[in-house]
Length: 526
View: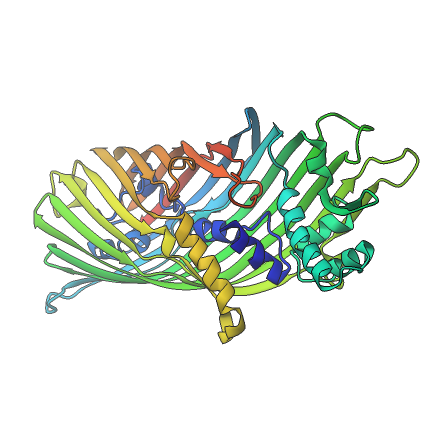
């Protein structure tokens, strides 16, 4: 698997923090969507409930519950805090609050008793369906591996191949050729800065990594991400006798993601004792694009106070454009007074240009089964006393697929390898959402809980989950409503700073974040 990833990156001369392509697939699918304050306060469990504009993104049949038109706006703020545990050492990171926009839009209704489906509704809405804002930091002392290890291995294979073809070819010429070859960009940056080199003892030559020769290294990683997926939705729903609701949505998600990362290794023993002091690698990466999807669903009321819902989300087809730039600096710590610091940028090795890459991504199908029990069910919402509601969601994360746009068949084999890797490391998972509301005349109180299951196949070593607790208050009177909610995550994930070749094991950082967010919704009936 690791060799597949290394080969893919080498082909396109793109090194995104040791092969991030499978992680990019997960980033686009394993997320907790925003919504209105009401929907967020009840854990996002709105699939069978309806009557909230967020239904357009969960179960569009819920739009059919509307009897009057509505305008809604939902501003919010997210708070970023995380703890990284790596090789027995903890580190924390935090950032200032970030603004985001939850479900915002308008619903129009129409009633015609002469129609079989007398009540219909139409909505236009936008929502933040993924929030990429995060700040991660971790560090530790490692005597097992180095991020330069897979770089040295890749160059070793190249070096041996060159020697087999021409045993008399000088090492300096092999290195010069390698700097202009199709080796991965990170390996070439390592060669340029002498992190990776060829050592000759007078009788034979050996490919070395200076960081590996140091034996024990300090390692530190910092990653700041921002952006999200904002989806525009056009929805239509119909209501038959307040017993059966049917709806559909066409969604257009817009992706805007950026990541800044910094990784450094330094000699644990200090300076002046070997030919390695430190090496650091920084990168700027962005991914932008647009997608298309559809959602269909229904809600049935077999008895007055019970609602059952089912929704199906088609895969989203994304057309994405990635941009990337990187820098590396290495201090080889040799004789005092000589130049020991060497640096290089990605543009230096790519004819003055940083790489861009266009591709398509197809996300998995999603299925949502829901139920809701309404207390004192009544045709008049003002007479209802509250509800309890739950969603069960199934997502097959391993079915994400990358595709080459414009029928570039020459690259299909490489994308097949990446898709095989996605299937190898991810698995299907269930997500659960539960919430409730109690109504006291014009005031409502709400509580919620959600759990998003581990998408990794190796559940023994890769412990991951997204778990949120939430609560909020609401006010409704004379056609106006104001809702306020807060969501507090208790999330766990893993981060792999670099991948070494099998059968050696990768080092992992355990990440715990509490990136809470608050949402305020203001709406008006018409």
